[in-house]
Length: 395
Ligand code: PLP
Image (cartoon, rainbow, N blue to C red):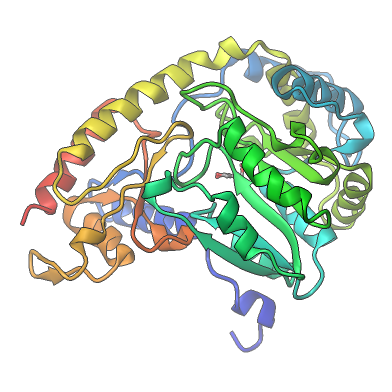
């Protein structure tokens, strides 16, 4: 690896992808692993969206698309922002990318200079810190705990701000905690941000529709925030389109322009067929995907009930996304089946080896006391997985 760049050598491998690879490897060895480590809906893409993609192939959408996305897709995105979020974004404020992950990477690359600080309320999505570092920024973690439902308070935000703070990045509903910021909570953060006009906000709303309490709030709609917020979204989670790789942003025009310039030298426009299908997905009434949300809701309740019965699992009620994030620190220092558990990573490995259940250590998300369990799996798998976990952690 000394032939490789410092950039790649200092980068962490995505812990969720690493766990997925490890799970595949064990499965290939014939082990009966239940994978609860991935952030991926287990539904098929709705038929009407597949039809749109087939039509796009037949209609010969086979050339390079505009770097920032087809104009009619951007119009559908603008309509969606208005319909679902009450936000007015013109087409020159919207950029379509190869997944929200690329949208986030674009933003980091066009906004951060070396040493600029990015506040990450922890736990945060696994890739945020490495994307920031790749752009030579400095991630500043603000630890939260189960006592505040893993949400950052205005006081914590205020304390974390320094003259070098350039941005704050967060997701709501949150991966990995499932927390949803209410309007009042975001208004509280906005009070602090209004005192610091130079700070940009990345609001990652990719789990917007997977919300069991309703009332998704975009911070861009709060007083004084619109001109400094980049709203990130995509079709991976709500439409089960993870592999089709379409994400997008709405934000200040100069930032959209810069992202387009950067993407133009990096990857160009996103996949043409997937873009066409995304128009159909976004134009559909939200109740077309309600069956998935209802199913996730049901599973969340089952998972909370069953995990709640296991001694040592400390849980809150996550209001969205499809993860629970139990605090399992009461196991630290204990010996289970001859193995001493010292931290969340060891606990996740223990569950993989002794219960044949794949989860992800909270350390990957900036919280060393928790593990993330995805309930994007069938009810049968979830029940079996939790029964195995309960058995494996019995003292
Ligand atoms: N943001 C969050 C919070 C996520 O959980 C994910 C996917 O796991 C993404 C962004 C990236 O999504 P995409 O598939 O659009 O790249």
